[in-house]
Length: 222
Figure 1: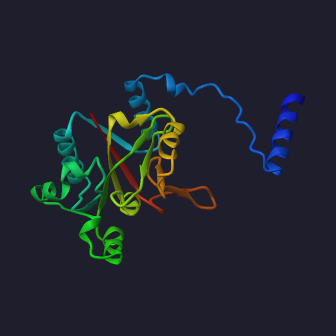
Figure 2: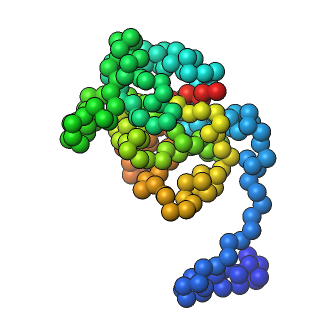
Figure 3: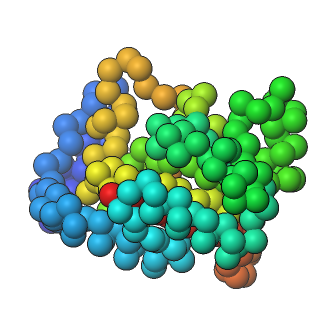
């Protein structure tokens, strides 16, 4: 560490102790900001696969429903819960599921929180949501939660299926925070999901699904 760098760090620490907010050090723009849309989609896909997620791409809503039917059949899903966000709601999954022989409910089908929690933790085989952003630099989904995007739908079931319009693939985390946390109308919760839920014991042995889904499947929809 050079003397000038050391002095700068010490000065920033002193400013923090006095309550002053130090200016952010200017950094070069991330590599991802220079990528085309198709390159961003490719990078998001590759990064998520590295984290043991699964990615499919479809051309439209019809193709998305066809792929979703294949996934639910392959995964043996008999009962699922779908969010009511602006991506999933237009698919009308509860009505569609009846033709597929699959019971699909939403959070609004339950008379109280206890019956909703009983279903999402103990009865459904999969949670189906949209996503507000897909972050290319790490293969991460970002879900902004409100009454139409119940947090437990993406966290409690053993399988999480996310439908993401390709125009929502963004380069970096800052692309999300700049859009979500501006102005006064900020969400109470934002969930970032990078692959299936994983944790490790004291010996470093990895376990899937200990605190969330064991499987994450993303459908990128044109």
